[in-house]
Length: 283
Image (cartoon, rainbow, N blue to C red):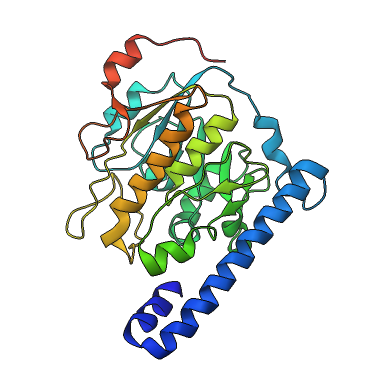
């Protein structure tokens, strides 16, 4: 929908003015509403109870380390096998290789409703009765979900106008996921916010290649949804990772990149096997 409006605005100056004004006001109102309801919920105890399950995760893993497994093409089943004894977050199409390995992430996250539509049957097959799944409220609005899943309030509107009409990419970072989760242009970013809320102090990314192209495969296992704005996909992701880096730097959180190759250079790089040799007891 937004893609079509942007296309019309770029082709017709007259209609473009009205489209931009409409989108600017709409995004601002939705974002303010998200912030207001989040404040009422977090500070005053008013509002929907659908997010209440998130509160039990506050500092659940205080001081521990975790691995967030993105689905870039560098990821391998062999890497997943190495992580069986670690606390891990999986996402999106990782679900499609569960028939090839007995590795299962400690937590699973997904926020894009179009990706969920493609993967819904597999996700429900493996996780319908589970309580370790994090999904955005956007999915709740559109599709069947597990009754024990943890719904998080995703604010995608706060930077939408700048993204779509000015190619200006930035992200805010939320340390209270019960109040809101800020979009950082990827589920990986949202899972970093969730991990910080859970108390992790060392976060390792793996499979975060960030070398998106139109011609090459972009994922370890494709989920079948084509990003209509792939030209800016890398810049958007890097902007999100940079925001997470800035937050972590000032709040005692260390984020490392354990991806094999790729183009993500925001974080210090580490070698996965070296980190696993220093395995510590997680809470």
